[in-house]
Every structure is written in structure tokens, then in C-alpha cells.
Length: 145
Image (tube, rainbow, N blue to C red):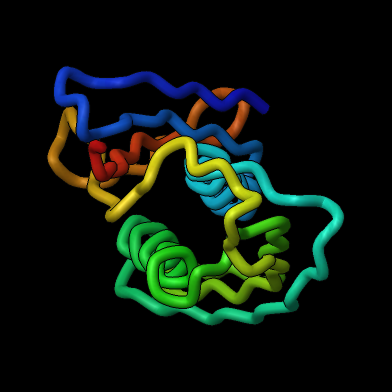
């Protein structure tokens, strides 16, 4: 499993390339990558269990809807994701169990991500099958201080 992250021309965006050995792993890695760009969880704090179910018309739209749902936990509920386990995944539905912790002063925000966008090259998210699994490109908009 490789995760690659690179900044694109605009300082307010982070472009990522996410890899996974299968689609379930790709969804898990996308969530981990997004939250690793935000902040590091505090391993000593109490974790909150969270269950989410997201639906969409196809797998690419599902990945975006899933990441946007996870962004809701960061932006609105002030929860920092600690772990994610995709329990089931079809082409139009994902069910995941997460753990998170309340965001607080002890967290050092690395990138204040405000939204998730489609991949840069095509203008739309595209999940590509590779020799070793799957990959996709995702862009995160960040608030610049």
C-alpha cells in the first residue's frame, strides 16, 4: 500500500493519489489520507464510535459522498477520525464503522481542509484498476492562514 501526496500549483489545494489493494481498502485509505492531512489524533483520549452509511449512483460518486460525509464530522461535529473500517461496500452503498475524538486545543491542525474535490486531470473523480489494485486522485481545498 502506497499513499502519495503532492501540492499542486494553488497553495489552497492539496492533490492526493490514493492506492488500495481492493475498493474497500481504497475507501479506507482515502479516509485515512484525508484525516492525516488535517491532524494527528491523540491516542490518550476517549474514542467515540460512529457508524455511517452513504449511498450514491456509482462507485466514483460514492467515494466523493463518503469523503464529504467524513468532512462533516470534522467541520460541523468537530470530530477527528482515529480509525475506519469499511464493513460493506457495493457500487452504490458503503457502510463503515469509525472511531473519533473531539477536536480540541491539544490537536495541532496541519491543514484546515474545507472541502473535497474531484481529481485534477479529468475534473471528475476516476477510480482506476491497476496491476496491484486500485488508485484515484482527489483534491482537498484548504483554508489558508
